[in-house]
Length: 438
Ligand SMILES: [Zn+2]
Image (cartoon, rainbow, N blue to C red):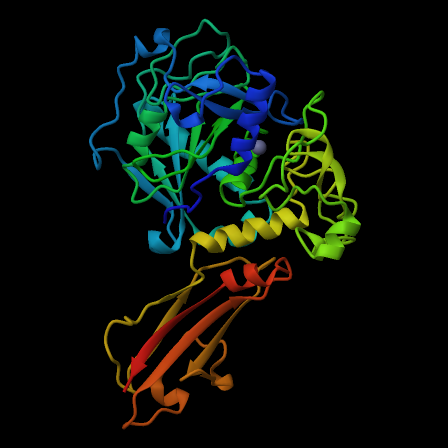
């Protein structure tokens, strides 16, 4: 399913801030202008992020030797590492290997599995893994390893031309976006792409707000054999799925000059004002947080030092020395999952009128025990049949229907997780199918 995020607010704010202060070069035009775009990177594997404006094309010394080109759609092997449902009801995560030769495709699959295992051990990814499909694309590189590893002068011919020392920043691992797009098109659908680059060197990057033919709006790159690079992917999904802001700040940025941010995890309001106006994360104020400490309003975030607040002292959206989303962040992530994925799907077609003896079946996404708390309810003409609660398959007779009338039968799944407090998020975590039964 397409991730419906037309504007990537966090990065847009970041690029404005970067451009205004001239902190990352002289280019100040929009990210979509064609020749440069803003990407996020993490100079330290335990620290806050930075942003840089990088060329959308790879350096000439790399492109000159690049022989590997994406083949026509369907020509590259794609493995469904996890397929829990149809793409229109799932988040489709495409994983592309770079710097793996034909003989190293098994290594790629093992490395991709390791990354996914690490990311999906983090809540709320862990509980909601069943809302994702994972597609592994076997991009074959002519060379093993990637450019800029171990040193800047190293040039490799690889499938999507990933390279360290992007914009002269050692830990910034850029890619050829067009090649990524071409490989991602091999998968049935592409909401978010991970590029796993064959390297032991720490590094990665986050690309957001993209427009791609394959459909994805974000790319996260990460090195394969560095055991902390997965945190880059986990953080970047926070932007693209949870629409979360960065909770870190830049020294010297001073006071936040803008209007109330649109992101759910930064605010101009202090706790009292937030409570009084019942806005942002007021429902979580004072709660003990998974990141340690208590949810409140901590000054600094969204790149600015003063006049803007974040929910907790630390979180994965602030620094990679923790893998914890804070409570407001976690809620936004779960709401994001449900914005693009369906908990419940009809296995029995809703397209035709059924008889009372026909079995009505639903499939539930296979969510893990943990945060999720899913319940199924059945309704006949809007009135719940309580004795049917929890059933995944039944016929009209079990719902008390007899021949002679025409009825609307609805199955509803709701995630009653305590991790959602916003009624709008709860509504997004509820979905229904309706059949006509005669
Ligand atoms: Zn970020």
